[in-house]
Amino acid sequence: MMATPLVALIGNPNAGKSALFNALTGARQKLGNYPGVTVERKSGRMGLADGRPVELVDLPGTYSLTPTSPDEQVTRDVLMGRQAGERIPDALVIVVDASNIENHLRFALEVLELGLPTVIALNMVDLAARDGLELSSDALSEAIGVPVVPTVAVRKRGLDHLTAALTLLVGPEAVQLRPQPAAMSFEERTSYAKELARTTIVSETPSRRLTQTVDSVALHPVLGPMLLLALLFVMFQGVYAWSEAPIAMIESWFTALSDAATANTAPGYLRSFLVDGAINGVGSVIVFLPQILILFLFILILEATGYMTRAAFIMDGLMARVGLSGRAFIPLLSSFACAVPGIMATRSISDPKDRLTTILIAPMMTCSARLPVYAVIIGAFIPARDVGFGIGLQGLVLFGLYVGGIAGAMIAALLLRRTVARGKSSGFLMEMPKYQWPHVADIALGLWQRAVIFLRRAGTIIFASTIILWALLSFPKPPTGSTESPVSYSVAGRIAEGLQLVMAPIGFNRDISLALIPAMAAREVAVSALATTYSIDAGDDEARLEQSLGERLKSDWPLPTALAFLAWFVFAPQCISTIAVTRRETNGWKWPAFMVCYLFVLAYAAAGLTYWTALGLGL
Image (cartoon, rainbow, N blue to C red; front, side, top):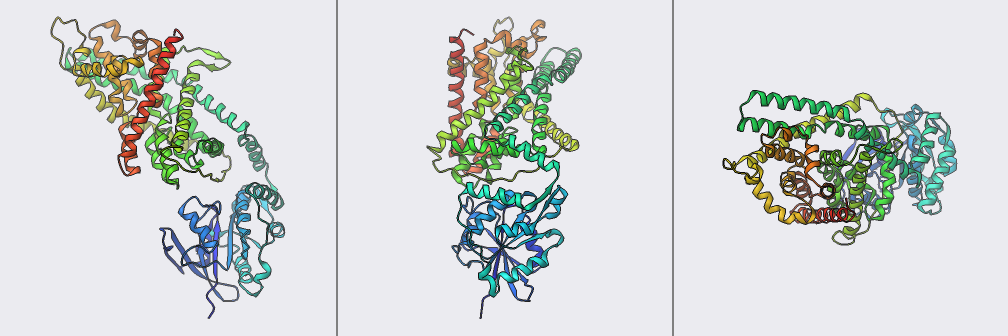
């Protein structure tokens, strides 16, 4: 008795493969795992045009027959007869996304080289038509030498023609329909896929041609990185140029609130708690909300337009040179918002050494918590002047700090991949979404969510850390008539003076040493810690109380110390939340401890090098 023919569905992720499988098999499906691996095996029964039954198996989506994950390994092994408990399919259905035909044909060509009886399901032709793309399945079939059937799986269109084509593939005539293409390299396959796409496309709208024109620049090996750097440069210029007015407005609110608290409370601990701790401490961080929202405005727009995927493609080449996969780009990009979701996003990286390296360097991406620190130091020490047409010096310095963090992360990745995380890097393929105008409502919602997260953080972690620091700075009080400052006499001040012995060689004073301790809870707490320290230290000195934090820093810190402080925060050991999520994702304390130690050494070395270089230059 002959075995029931086995037909495999294969294709890139998001080609509509599962929808086609469901449409062909209906409720006649069963689920399980492939022997030896926890990869889902989804199979079902369908009938051919002549009534014969076949078993249809839905293989995991993949971009290549060179596997980089267990799912992709199973797909390759099934097609080549290497998967335990699974025979080589009698026929294949390659599912191709009609709206992204060029990329999908590249993989189809690789599968056709196996020489198995094959039919191509040109799926989602309705979406391609909606996007202004008209295709000829007959032209593609003639060029490629296998049947090509247009389908719309979600609407069950084209299924009869697909079933009829499959009937021929598993019948007596199957030998005559086996494709026999020559083996090609990746580059040859890519070139041939472009040629086939041009053959298949009957017409396309100007908008699609515009996308191709834009991509010829955005994805160019030279122009693409230049465009990315230019966009980042404009973004950081905007962070300063557009935020001045709203920051001044928020500062005036907190000044009025501080004046009201001072006028309505008697001198003592209650006034100090309200003014020095809550208002000046937390307020010194909240004033930077406009800059954070401007930064995320750019990021959200770039994501919504479809450009961010192009940026990932551009960065893939750079990351490959330091031993990382392009899959690391999205987790690292997420780390610009916060390292915690960035580290969690590394779960998409299948190679364990790739994933570990990405986790270890994710905290070096300049998260939004660093922005208040950068902003207050840059605002105090870097002149607000132009260095060229429309190029502000402050924005240029901020851009340099972000680039410094990225460069440091890439160098660290290179060293890690050659030492503790030794291994080969693997490339990846990605689909380019079409360009589109961002929806204002979606952008507004994203900004609102970002503002809520920041303000919630200000009202919890930052507030709690600031109040604890205020208490440590307020007790004990110096004796009446003592000339010692309240900060130096306090518990916190004495702790800071001990820590300063370690930090003095890199130019850090007592107040910086003090601010670094609560900054482990959240980096932006360093700003509120400095504000609280100086507010308490000012005592009843009206002139010093009226100074802003930036003005106080400028009068008390030499420029080399300020520059060293910036360099420290480029590599600063991360917050407690990051350490906790690293421990969870690596299942132990070994790698979190390693990460804290190596980042502390980097931060100390960078700050020291900056400080002594600045002194040597006479700054």
